[in-house]
Structure formats: structure tokens, C-alpha cells
Length: 173
Length: 170
Image (cartoon, rainbow over all chains, first blue to last red; front, side, top):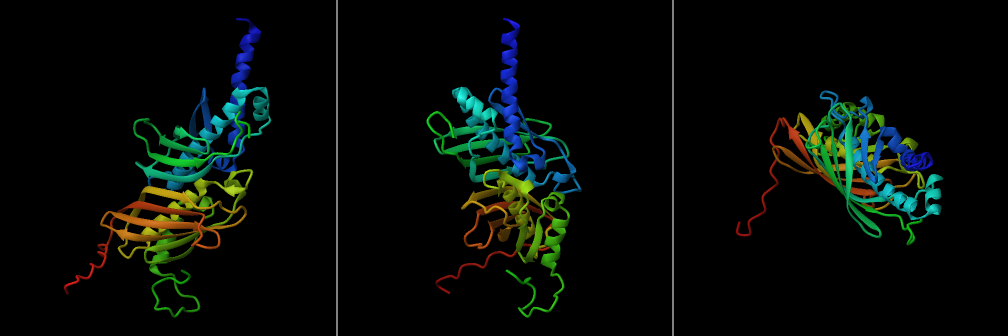
């Protein structure tokens, strides 16, 4: 495989990572909490680096329940928004260019969310991943899990429904 | 719910904080994140708390609308529920959220403060069940409704049982 082809592949990955970063940076609250996203293909893992500002109970110290709930909701919404962006990138050149310009479809809106708090969130980084159980035309059903040191011992889970922005048949906004 | 609940209704010029208000206030003081996002205690009485969060552009979820992120509403309702739990005359030592469900009724308004009210509707020895609303101007037309269960430790007094139904034969 020639050098140009390899570079094109690397650029493709970099462009997708850049689009994801741009999507996350467009939401002030994501930056306020300090949440970051890593991408493997179209699967995202969110990371919330620990910070003193995020504490609920300082005696433990434990992460505030609202921070955990926020992080779960952010993970779900970002996964859904990314899935829509990904569809546009893959659909055609015009879609990919629109995303490169930062023209994302409107953010999904929460209809309802139910959070189960399993263990206190300790003073370390928090990770989360969302599973989209069903993406309908207008409504998505998503489950999210958040964990710290052990993937098998999540500190919290959530189950939520979101209203998706209307898009045309090709996925364009 | 503008007056603290201890008095018979005759409000003094500057009534001292009631125990409910002190306990709710103490909870809030001990939550760095609640202070970080600007949550303020408005009122508290036995089993009820009211909080307010001012609009802050750093907390926006959707840049197109300028509306606060749903996570902020979650944080406000979770904190309000916890505060309501701590106002209980059963005097719990600590509270931890078990679950919280939030349903969105209408979009929040950008650049406007958001209020929350929470009320304990059932206490057992270990659990307090709470309902809450988040609203701008009218709690009967809320932005979101919520229901939650909180794990409580160290109640100093047992919760009161709900009054038994009157027997038709008595």
C-alpha cells in the first residue's frame, strides 16, 4: 500500500476524531464538567477526570449524584448526536464537509431519564458508555453505565428516552 | 411555601431559622458541587425544601437554544430531594440517592433562573420517597417532574406511620 493511501487513512481517522472533539466542545456544560470522549469506530467511551469541584460529600469524598447523573445523560446524548454526525459523514461528501464545518444536527432532547445509584463515586476518574437500544425516527431509547476502577462494578446506570432532531432521508439536518 | 413551617402563622420581622431550614442549609453547605453551580436554599419546612439555581451560560446544554443542560436539572432535583429528606423531624444523620427519575414536561427557558421544590411523601426506617418539580414561574406548569428514593441513616426518631383508614363499622 503506498504512502499516500496510508496518509489518507490516517487523515480520515483524524477528521472523525476532530469532529467528535468539536461536537463535545460545542456544549458548554460538557466543558464545565471536564468530560472527554474517546472513539473506537462509532463507539464512544466518555471519561470524567476527577476534580474537587465535582464532589458531593467531602467526607468520603464522593462525587455528587447530580454530576454522575449529568455524566450519564451527557454520554447518552453525545453518542446519539455522534451517530447522527457519523451517518452524515458516511452518506456523502456534502455531509462530511458540513460536519467538518461544525454544522451538526440539533442536539437530542431528553424526554425522561431514570438513574440508579449503585455505589458512591470515589475520588478517581469516571467512565461511561451508552448502548442505544433503539433509535427510531424521532425517539431513541438508551441505557448508560458508569464505572471507575472496575468495569463490572458500575457506580450508576441510567435508562432514558430522547427526542431526536428531524433529519431528511439522507440524514441531513 | 414562603414561610418556614414551625410557627402558627404569625411571622416575626426576622424569624430565626427553623430547624428544618438549618438542616437543609447544612446539607447544601456540605455539597461543593451544589455551590459550584450556584444552587441556593430558598425555603424549607418539615419534609419540604425549595431551591433556586441562577442561569449560567457555562451550564448550557444546547448552544442553539441557550437552555441549561438536563444534567443541571438532575443536579438541582437530586440536591432538592436530599435537602427535603434532611428536613424530616425524624432527623436523619445522612442521605444517599438510590434512584431518581425525571420526566421533562416542557423546555426550560434560557437566561431565566430555575426553581425546584421537593416533598417527602413516605418515610420508612431506611428509605424516604420524594416527589419534586423544577419550574420557572409556576410549579403547576413545571419544566420537569421527578420522583426518587433516598437511603437514610441514623434517624433519631421513628417515622410516623400514615393514619389508618377509618373502618366503616366503627
